[in-house]
Image (cartoon, rainbow, N blue to C red):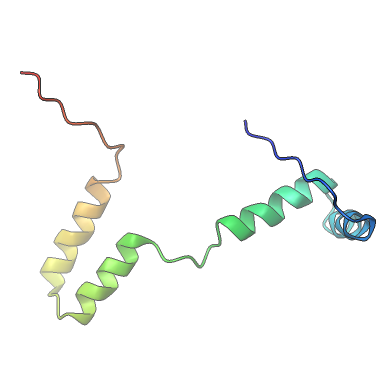
Length: 87
C-alpha cells in the first residue's frame, strides 16, 4: 500500500490536525487519511456516465434510448480486457 511523507509541516498545523482528529474520535493518521480521501475523491464529482446520460436527456433522448444507454453502462462496468489478435 502506498505511503506519503509530509515534510516541513508546521507545529500549528500538526496541533490542529491532532485536535480535529480528537474531535472525530480517531487517530491523527486516520484524520489525515479522511481529509485526503475527501479532497482527492469528492462525492460530488461528475461521473462520465452520469454526464453523458444528462447530455442525452438534454438532446431529446427517448426513454427507450436512455434505458439502452443505461444497460450498456451496467454491462460495461466489468474490467476491460485487452484486444487479442491471436486466433
